[in-house]
Image (cartoon, rainbow, N blue to C red; front, side):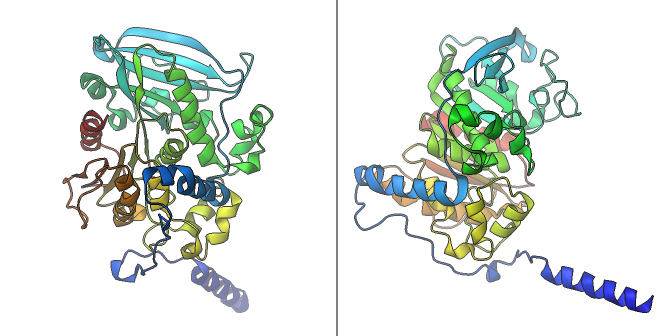
Length: 401
């Protein structure tokens, strides 16, 4: 018995020693130089668009996200419900099922769209995936609840979306549940669109990833919005919080129809620099969520400093369109400083387009937004999206679009 106990203690010790250590001490972050964003031959915006941008985009496709398929050939939609007195009478809501191939048994996303009722012209629209289902975005009683929906209350995450306030400020809102595209699990690809649409998209499941699929879904939502008369399709802002902020960035990079990109607490694999040893790491994200990125990304688990890119290069691919990156003081796991530095390091590309960036060199204090065409703020509080964040995004969209 004594030896069994001793052996168990040894095994436990080995396991604990093998666990990854996470750092929250800025003095231990390291000083790894970032890969060059621009090369000597890139001197103009035209040079960037012609050569350097395609090179960097291909690096991210090869080593992180995989391919980004186009629009399937037989998409069609079905309006399920329209409410002309939504959100207490200030909005028109439309619930639409968007099918990705022929037949009403085809893979689909369910879209929830809110537009200002009193608007006399097409309006700008914020779009993004939601975590728990359309019924959690608003407390409106007419929102359809799927039979297999998450068992949470109507309007459970209403405060994260602030649909009524967006409407009052002249903006629309469109969303769908990211699980419609692919369940967020290691084997989610088996029932998600990477499997069910591989013939239509001519793309094998292993050629891309869950993050890429969720981003692709945002592009398909954009396809639908281009058909909506009440939507100004030239002013659609793609947004996302946390993992869905990563998806929003990747959608914005690949689909230039998006007029602007908003990243809210997207962290590792999103806006935060991978080379900084602070908070979540490349190894941890690939271990906990092996489906988020392609297998090639896992070769950098132990040495992220050898990546042929870093996230400032991903953000730069959004140029010259407006970009907003936001962090929260208590969200150390997402490395707020790494997000700020990444946005800052993307500035040289925006400068090629004569666009102003953050305009500061030091990270700002909480509740002091900085920047112009690239913007950043640090909000007091936890990993979340609050009305304060939306206020900044509304101001940003009004001024930059």
